Image 1 (cartoon, rainbow, N blue to C red):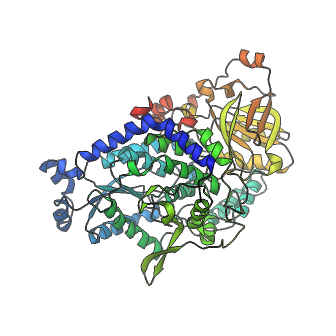
Image 2: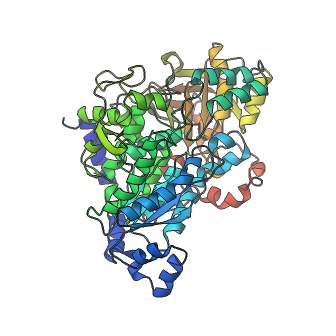
Length: 610
């Protein structure tokens, strides 16, 4: 089917807008490749001896042979976090499979992996966003030895995959293949978990009951099963063609997961510099790939964090996207998936109902996705309309189901849950932000109420516990942007705001901070830019100002006369408590130079983005 005209127009606009920077990026990628496809050929004998001194003799022989690809393994493994623990076994499998494919593989380096679920509401969350940039730099350190002809990236959760992507694109002359670990098996129902959280927030159950509920939800190896940022990451890698087809949501510690992991090494050897299908990631990921990522986010109701991460990834490839692009695409992309928090199902249920192969086929068939893109499997996204399976232990692919296994979870483009993607640009005299409304009921999407202003999420929670918020209001939580305190997620506010909304009050949130990919039932205009610390107008709001949050029209305004608004001075906040403790002093340089949210909240500038 022909592409939807809006999709074509947005893509053409991005290509035109990006032309200068993209050309400069590609020139660097091609120059690096032209220096010699086999990077280790440029190393001295001393360099090489250092690089494989510890390898087994059988591997050393192959590393001396430049016609054999050498694959880098870059991993976010640790055994504290459930999503990363399964990665422990992967390097051995990848090395064995690489040798069988006529290649070698070395563990090039590890990257840090922190969990927003552990740090949520704690000081450590103020390191979270910038951990993405640390991961990108750690990836660069791992690849800086110039020993590699392609790279396998092992990462799963919130900032890890975007960080690995930014790092990979900085080495755009190397092919890249992402190797996921998969979600944990299903625990208790998400509704039950959310209910216990609300009861705890109301003081109706104790910590013991809350802990037991959480342990039944987060109970084993793999990613959390709700459709937050971690699982949105896996969706993105799939729809951008960076996974093997259908790899995203296969559970860890299963035969299929092991075979997919081993197959990743064999495929990486094929697309490596000496392989038959040399595919540098910087050439492969282009404007159409980035547009496909945005479409995937919209069609599945994915995490709002990716309104920053996709921008940052795109910029690493010399591609310029902004929130207008997200907003315009959202108007034409149907919502095909209902997974928690946008529904009751988890990602295991979504995968069983048809998963990513079903979604990609539906979007392609409706003219709502670019098919003519590069992937690690070759040219064309149609390969990703298939799913993997084991036929007597042999890995094979077959067409994704023709019919959804559960239309309360997964639907066709002709019969979607809603006609749009549920993500909107919010703009007005307060600034620009985004709102995710795919989980917000229609009656809650327009809120016009007095502002109650806070400079710390804990102050709002204290006011809630004192009973001061039993009314219609818009919570304005400011000085939460990248430069103020690292832009922590404010998911800790969700239970209290949900309780107030369910009591019949009109409530909304306006913040220059972030909300978790797991949030969405209360209208929240987030990522407001410019942030308060950078002189953003959110810093002018006073208690009692009438605030309009209209998710239908995209209006985000303080209903204050223009003369008064212009005359107001910016609020000031004491941020000294954010500067030290839990490593925050080490991240001061990131806070001082961070860009605004719509620019990806990046703490470093690529040469073309000065």
